[in-house]
View 1 (cartoon, one colour):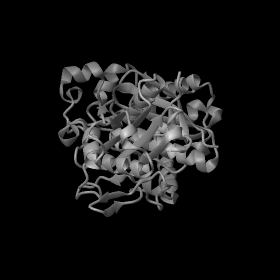
View 2 (spheres, rainbow, N blue to C red):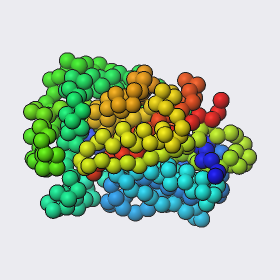
View 3 (cartoon, rainbow, N blue to C red):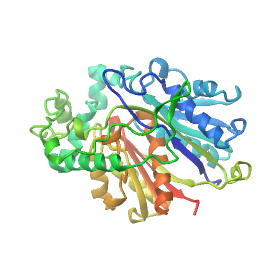
View 4 (cartoon, rainbow, N blue to C red):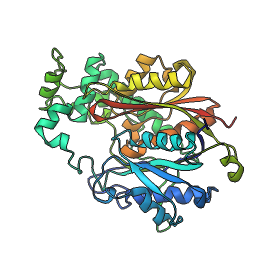
Length: 395
């Protein structure tokens, strides 16, 4: 079977959502993605050679209800003959798009694919699509839907994490993100030739454990705890709640894109690949838990034929602080190799774009640290999770 190599992986900076309009609020998702297509062409990717474009988008509503990557093709001035489409798998949409592109290449159905994701949470807020499982009582009971923060508190309480541990991870995330410098994989967002944003927003270098301890829990009184108790008899919810706004992922806007191709693509790009998509795995647990990440990571590692100790860089999407904490503990990951430059708690989780963002981050870090393997993990609502293993090939 053909291998799926990564020839480039880029992303926008993550722009924080603000009530008064964030830095990227005037840029729709298709335009964010189009900017990356333009950048890839400038870096030598011939648009006419691209067999398909696959982008993850989580909230399919309004201007994101159409074919976002196909609109981006037109905005970027790529050939009218360039096919493009979306996949939607909630928070794992971007990782799923990468896997879809890799699968096309591995199956011999495509030679060169661009895959990633885009999401404008400023313009198309989460739940603006009014998903049935969040509105219909009967369907909510069937699916176990709860506020995502309740899922996080459930997972933290189930696995014995304290409020202090969750807060401490957030402090770590902010410190590391604030110290990070954007690499070549971060492409500034421009509009009408003007740079709007050239680095991630949201990180606060002065974040302290004492300061976070003063913040009130967000989800302790959520009425949907009653649904959790019906689905998990005997579970005792945390008395005051565990996660706060500081230990939740920031809402933000962003896009990501990776160039995935066969070994032969190196000939006409004139450069070797920077990485290889080795394996991936989808898993699920009883909704609404967020702990399916552990089995997803284990399965992806098993399929790659490596152990957790072989992971040089782990990009674990901070879908609340509990996600990386749980994976570090259950897999025995070296914390110093995890979210080396912070994560979503500090700089945001633009839903459908996050899979490609953490891929770009991982490959950049692997190159700088001369590592070999990267592990990418994201949980989502309704108990689903996804993980992927990548390998740095340019050594």
